[in-house]
Image 1: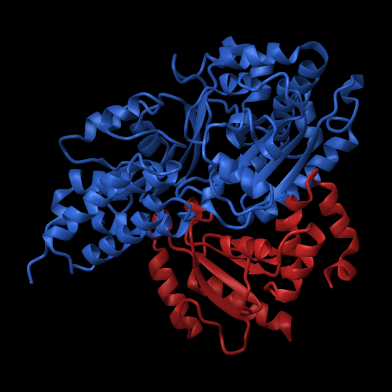
Image 2 (image 1 turned 180 degrees about the vertical axis):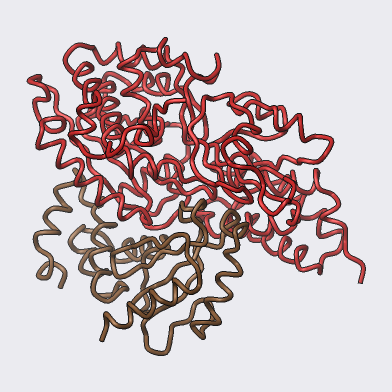
Amino acid sequence: MLAEQYPDEIKAIFAKYPVKRSAVMPLLYLAQREEGYIQKESMQEIASMLELDVTEVAAVVGFYTMYHDEKAGKYRMQVCTDLPCALRGADKFMESLCENLGIKVGETTPDGLVTLEEVKCLGGCDRAPLFQIQDGDKVAFHENMTVDKTMELVEALKKAQD
Amino acid sequence: MTHILLRHRDIPDLKNIEVYKKNGGFESLKRAVTAMQPKQIVEEVKASGLRGRGGAGFPTGVKWSFLPDNIWPHYVVCNADESEPGTFKDREIMESNPYQFLEGVAVSCFAVGATEGYIYLRGEYYHIALYLDACIAEMEKRGYLGDKLFGTQTSIRLKTHLGAGAYICGEETALLESLEGKRGQPRLRPPFPAVYGLYGKPTVVNNVETLANLPYIIEHGAAGYRQFGTEKSPGTKIFSLSGNVERPGNYELPLGATFRELIFTHGGGIPNERKIRAIMPAGASSSIIRVDDESFDKVMDTPMDYENVQSVGSLLGSASVIIIDDSHAMDWVINKTIDFFKHESCGKCTPCRDGNYWMLHLTKRIHSGQASENDIKVLDSVAAQMYGKCLCALGDFSTMAVRSAIERFPEDFKVRQA
């Protein structure tokens, strides 16, 4: 239960808004923190906290690309391949990442560590190629990347797991 | 020139609150709250000619003056949802000159009588939201935010809110829906946010860069601000330069600076001895400007302001200048932009939802060399029929690159012979 797990954070979230429903987005991030995706029970719990129907919460989850309702790798590596990045080699970068990780876009490495995803503009067009790593409710940018630097990062993430 | 917005490039460690204070920080907020009437600030901003930096270029002071005096509370919502492909300017302001930005938000709150201001950041700017939260806490500690500011009865509180990956939330009514905890889909207008905004109350929605100008305007007055830029487009603007250029990045220049100055003097020109083939001055939403031997000088000498970019067939928008060299074809470019808009269309109105679906099919087919001549006509016709019929600007934006590419680069849309 989120209410038992994060009582202080939930209180702080509710204090931010005069209308309860506005808390839905921060609460969904909270629900995504541990497992990297939002479980049905969490949606139900958030719905009752906000006096909403569970479908209204699920509609929010489904609308925004940074919420996930299915389990994936521990880290979601999200590479921008939009026009400005593509002009600086993002498509080739993505291809080589697939080769090096041995997976296709949308797939997860066999050890369950990294899911490779393609995303829209991240606001770092001058530092392409770039990606963000989504880890639960956290996001970190990795800019001016090369395939070698990325593979080193993956190794480091793997070591941190062991 | 010296910077108004990217002052951190002139003053090291400006993101340290003490350094910011030593360099005149919070003096504008103090002056506004203790020595000026809200209406006076609205008039000063009107006189400065400051125009919205999010892309639409609407006069900021005029926008503020639409708020009714008989409905309360008023809200200020800062649009930090920066998501247009090619735009990365608000990010630099918030990361490197956060206090000037937050001071600007506070000034706007005072000007419109709002005690609460929300800063809506795109979810990907998670690190910036955390950082701004820390900066807000520093300001509260020192009495620049909170209750009884500078010993007056004025209260101003600022809060950050994170989106979750939806370009459409940069559209102001979609942003408000999202902030209210709903799907980020645009509202039917009127009523406009100035009358019926956040929680149904009068609301001002302004872009980060717009608000970051306010401390300077309060300090130097409208006349001081107008020493930069042109008569109709006063002030400076941050140009986000990206694509096939030697030194991509943000450059703050007076409005009216030329493409040549941006691309060659600051951007270092085109790498690999290539030539510029096309420019998209307003990100993926642009009509594409064709650059060839014949048009090169005319385009390069065009002043980049809200009026003159139109003379070369495009718009300034948020000044996200994407440079495309002569190794790229426009069928590829529009396949990229439509892939973006198809993904970001919110699905609320049919022309945009279905139009982008079909445009993506067609641009894919054209780019892969499988298209017939009729496919190109159909693509142009779908785009033409969408334009002006969508609920918000996203639908119109999606058609700009498509139609201009087909019209201005016909050689890229010749059906390939088997």
